[in-house]
Length: 129
Image (cartoon, rainbow, N blue to C red; front, side):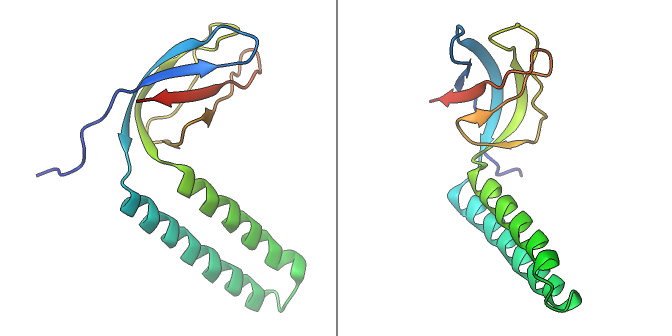
């Protein structure tokens, strides 16, 4: 039996300052705080192991050691911010009305930064209860 929560369909808006807000239609699944915490702790563990491993392999070279350290810090921060998993998304750019892509399975928070590859503007996706 599947115990995952049913997908929610929150009210969502794509906002670009200076343009009219555009509605977005999406279906998301909310991660529990425990799931987010365990996912973030796993990323932090892998981050620390890879940083120590690179320190040992590179024999203390600070430049090579900094690469996995900073990459791991960014990925750990971004995984904590992913409160929702996107199941379905349909939305268009407020400026040019072209569809904006957001892959199913993406981990997003609110607001979530989007990119319109047609007009190259960067609107934000806001979710409301």
